[in-house]
Length: 309
Image 1: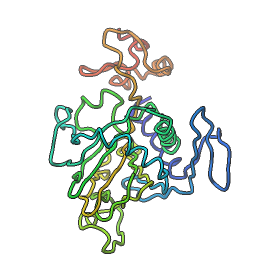
Image 2 (image 1 turned 90 degrees about the vertical axis):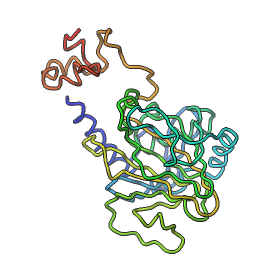
Image 3 (image 1 turned 45 degrees about the vertical axis):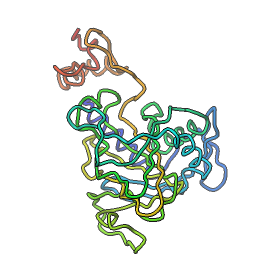
């Protein structure tokens, strides 16, 4: 199977299931549409009625009250004495560099750092239908007066950052505080035709579809199209804070596991997908050699079944 077709099908399923907020059958209904998902620990509550589709280009959804006030305050407490200047990924080298494009401060939590963090990560997985292991560690960000993040993409332009986990499929942006004015999330390339904005919106927020930072809300948007190509309409930024301060938490989610440290080296003769033998029998080694066998710059996923080693 062509890897792009396979990923495209997966993205289509994710998009439909996320939009309708359907959940796995391993749940217990509490009241109305509120569900409690079965997992070992901690207790996981998910309410799909709080999810609203904001845009189809890019695909964006807002979950009202995704985090409790206590969860928001806990994440801030974990981060506030560990903040450093935020960095950006260089488009050529992939290295983290300082830039005036991004003037906030931030830090990364550890995955499942405590019970509350683990519960939030599990809830994100339930909402997005993407495995926990595909996510990066949650990044906590703090914006003071005038601080911003200019419009940018969350998918990568360099190959270095794609080696672990591949492209970022989706971003979940959680707002940990209210902002008196400014600090909106802006989508300058959104195809959304109109959005009424009164004087409470900043001038920056008038340059495209915008979402106000409200404590506890979470914004989910996809950086890839349904056919797995990058979505230029997912360009987004954080408007400058004009009054008050802004705290947020970001979870980036990749197309593959982000926990796997390295891929198989070119010296190992193995298959990295359980479907490799059947794909090889159907002629995929010849039809899709880049994925199956590999190329000069990348190791294939089915080298053993394709007898390429």
